[in-house]
Amino acid sequence: MIKKLSAEFFGTFWLVFGGCGSAVLAAGFPELGIGFVGVSLAFGLTVMTMAYAVGHISGGHFNPAVSLGLALGGRFGWGELLPYWAAQVVGGFAAAVVLFLIASGAPGWTAGGFASNGYGTLSPGGYGMVAALLAEIVLTAAFLIIILGSTSARAPAGFAPIAIGLGLTLIHLVSIPVTNTSVNPARSTAVAVFAETGALGQLWLFWVAPLIGAAIGALIWKALLSDEG
Image (cartoon, rainbow, N blue to C red; front, side, top):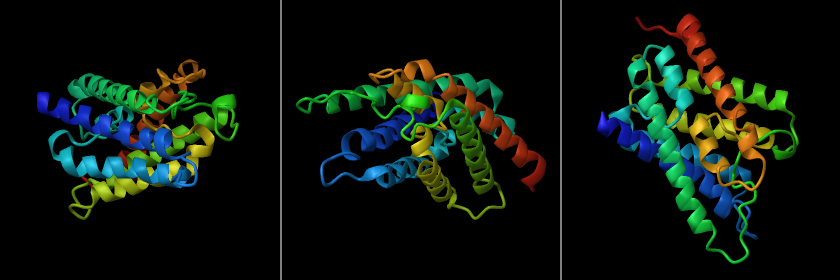
């Protein structure tokens, strides 16, 4: 079990450090900034690389919503759910600490939003709570369908991390303007702690919506799409 939890810790660490780090350190850099397309790709690459690196150890969840969806889909034991959640949250927070220490080394730097998620005044596009809730539910549901489908026994072997990584990239391309993209409660929690905004007050949505979305995606897969069993 310790190897599984360690894999989830390091995988979630890499996701937050690489994905949020690209937003905090590189997205707005004068003339050389990677923009939101680059940030979207960075999140996809973090999941893809760690899925190949440690996915064979823990299943490569790196996300409490994914763990819940896989449990509902019959791919993951319920008894491991809370330990996985703990490893993911701690791994994400550790990455946020390291990222904060690096970013604060720049002269005149302020944390600002620190790649946090939000709605209303904290939404990049000013989208309201209902829009944010709907986007996070729908996109997390789609993410679970991608994960369950690409890792099913009849899917082409060895390509699941690519499909999942590209799926997460697409999710970010769609929803960065709406919520700055969560679909991952551990990612949202990690950076909200350091944000100099009201991100912590809105964090509830970025737990509730991804967990609901993951449950919906898993149930859709199991009821309508799965050819297993």
